[in-house]
Length: 181
Length: 181
Image 1 (tube, each protein chain N blue to C red):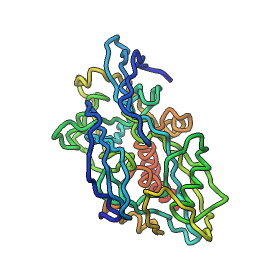
Image 2 (cartoon, chains in turn cyan, purple; image 1 turned 30 degrees about the horizontal axis):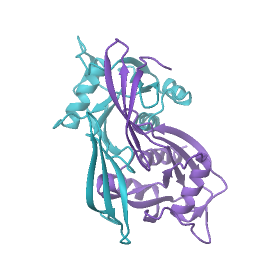
Image 3 (cartoon, each protein chain N blue to C red; image 1 turned 120 degrees about the vertical axis):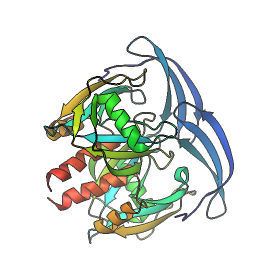
Image 4 (cartoon, rainbow over the protein chains, first blue to last red; image 1 turned 45 degrees about the vertical axis):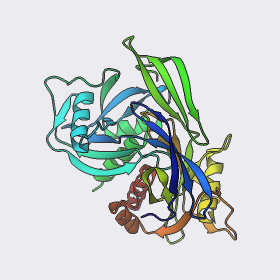
């Protein structure tokens, strides 16, 4: 669907980094006027709702520099170049939590900030995890702690804003709904 | 919570635009090594889950340049400088949909992309809307179409990926859960 399409007549790349690229697109609007759009290009990401045998949600706590605080989130990570989302989801689960699985079910995907970024999160689910004998090394500049939470504990952490991101908020509603079926 | 804190020893502002600012922070990691973080600063946003008298979800369709397609989303928009989230939520509801309300209930807030951006979305709910006699003018470079959807219609549009963003996906789970209570 291209309703109200904005046609680009010029693209200026301001910055190309490890994770994000910033472009300024000059566009023609549906009424013929012009405007500029600030666009963040992102490789895309995955996230995993993983439940232990006891039904606890596997989470990781890590420092999130944009907010200058640590957040508790479901395991997640960026797609590497050419990487399949499902492969990435398994890799991030293993690296961040030390758990693995051979049952990874695709749930849904969503754009996180459609107004200015093309980041998409591919979300997976598993309730069949087993601990790895050895956790594979993750990114060398990433420090995470593992937590296993009941849904009630996770909801309490959400009220305290220590869980405070869109994908984990979505995961908690998903689990709540699943409990009621 | 500052667990695994990354201390900034240098900040470089690459770009400061209408919506986003891009900083590169040089940081000291918990193990004493250093790294760089690409950080998008964003003013924050609001979104509104608004139901008509018949229980239909009020949505807007608009072109989303980062994805080069139009998406159907719940009404949302950026905070203006110094603007209260609730004031902004009412303004965006009025400008984008032509509806107003005097019952706007705060639901939750979440960071959309905690890995690289500080954007937060403040989410509100109302089931008491009434049409304005005249829709106030919105942003001059914004073109939106109004839709009123049953939950089933919205879920079908989500399967077709015409609804495809985190806040609207969250809204649909919220409404589903609410239906079951």
